[in-house]
Image (cartoon, rainbow, N blue to C red; front, side):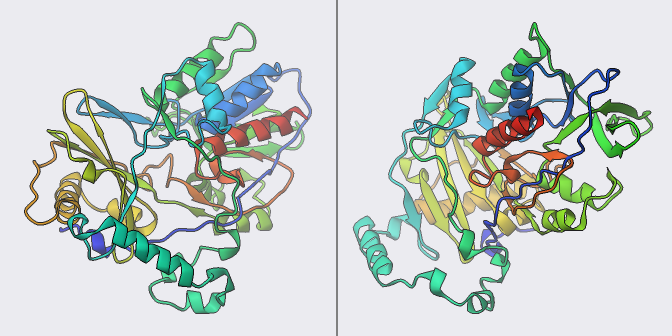
Length: 432
């Protein structure tokens, strides 16, 4: 099978932020050991657990995997720690809550020194582009371009080339109040920071948080007679394992949007979600942002960094970092349908195709570089505990089970601050 990056078709969306506040609320029973059960140990679950513990609540956290962190996941490629999920603290100097958390736990954070970004148009290569000429052309385009918000929506959707963008809404495009400013990244990866915080919560002298790993939640049931939520779990490592149940007054789900969509149409919720809530959930889109890390046995020229390649229907962002061992690790990010299509190919196929493409588009005629020594490819859609990365959400409110996660945060969906703020938001609702 041959992987051709030009076959990918871009697809993406930014809709209203998906905000489920669907809540099973009950009075506290004297026999209940925990005040709240949180589903998931990603940033939103972590943020909520911190807030609830600080207010004296006994918190139970259930995690299906054998590790904490969710999509805050770090791996090593040729000796370099890389984040395969969330990786940046955007707006590090402009109020991003991840900065305060990182500093309070003594995490080593490095501000990124970005170079001049470059755009490589479709059917062009880096060697053939004159920067001043390209800038001049962009200026002309900006002066004569049409305001898409004034274009009739039907004419946009009728375009064959734009059809995969059917989930994009011009009304909500770039509506968010995101954090601007300097970007930064935890030197040892997000996973090390998340693990350090969870350990502090679990070993606290007062109201330590109880985290149970390898506990996949298979059902949530509101028991009216007892005014509790029954949470049923199983060990995903052993299909024949006996279920474990917990009875709690309140439950907060931070399950990723893709996982929720899978469970919502099954017998996971008893009673079933209201039709309006279920409809909003199923209309929301779980993204397909995947990363490809290529490790080269020698450092690369700066021409490889800070670059966005434009294909016929795809944009791929390229960045690179030098390692202490005089190697270079190159990151390529692909999203939407391109990111989803990527998951169908093997690592070797991706490595060969991407390397050839980079040589052709970035190096120019006659450019050579050694074959990558290692590759690391994410496949978030295939991950049963993620079912995608980032989201294209919409809003709905109800009054039973709490939901947090980046997909529920209107201003910062698809980001670490979105997860943190959503956890704090839902913790505040639980406390009131």
